[in-house]
Amino acid sequence: MKCQQIKLRTFVIRKITMKTTRNTAARSAILDLINDSHVALSQPSIQHKLNGLCDRVTIYRVLDRLLDDGLIHKIVNVNGVVNYAACNSCNHKHEHGHDHEHVHFSCRVCNELTCLDQVTPSFLLPEGFQAEETFFTISGICKNCQNSNE
Amino acid sequence: MKCQQIKLRTFVIRKITMKTTRNTAARSAILDLINDSHVALSQPSIQHKLNGLCDRVTIYRVLDRLLDDGLIHKIVNVNGVVNYAACNSCNHKHEHGHDHEHVHFSCRVCNELTCLDQVTPSFLLPEGFQAEETFFTISGICKNCQNSNE
DNA sequence: TTAAGTGCAAAATCTTTGCAAATGT
DNA sequence: ACATTTGCAAAGATTTTGCACTTAA
Image 1: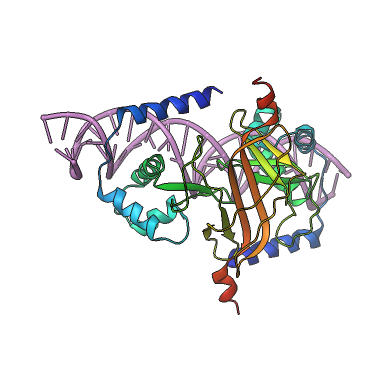
Image 2 (image 1 turned 90 degrees about the horizontal axis):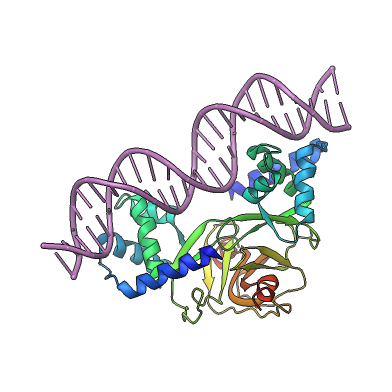
């Protein structure tokens, strides 16, 4: 309860002060990486791909900023690892976070996390529960690994 | 790929050697806690409830063992926190993990994670993807918080 | 008795914070 | 010029590992 209020307040402050976003090397490198990737990337994998271009901490901060700016979204994989992906299919309509009604697929073999923008599961909630966001991840074997196994 | 093989091997060894499970104080206390809870519990919340009865590390190890024995299942909440719940509705039919087709509900207000055993979403995967397990979590406001808000 | 389980200390991982220096606009 | 962003060091938080000690069966 308290936590929610604090978050909301921070958000309002950011919008009022209207900080300008600077196009730094770190920011564009990270954004390019995420935009060019067909799978979601974790901080460690981004760090590895950047290969020392910038500090560990900078990556965390840039990712937070990109989230804030609505350019990427955050997906927690089934193993608890946080991943980031480009916001192609979001329409930002929810009050509490973006609209990410689409499903994610977590491959057991290559361990990659893919957005399945087309898939929208249907479900019926029991009385009394009010849904705001869905986090649907299906694990199994992805297209690539399936094909390369034949 | 390599990781998968190692995991499989460990699993086989455990089944062959057939270790006997000892009914220790820690194990039964933790299992009781999880069985008696209507929501999923995280390691920190279990540790708090046990109030120093056993070591932090023991809790991790007992939880691993209970998972292994199929008495509990693991749910990663939308914030990445790992939770554990009793295996009431599992039917253990999958080769890669249990069958947890049911949905979990994560409450934004009380932060509790509940199993919705009745709910089974339907979806259609794109060609090439092979589903084995589903990890479906819906966040919003749970029954309790909805009611207490009226 | 003795293998399984535990406690403690220490390491490993991932993430956040504070502050001074660097940099984009 | 100056507010934003970065790097570094350090702290937090969570989970794992090694090893000697304890305990259930």
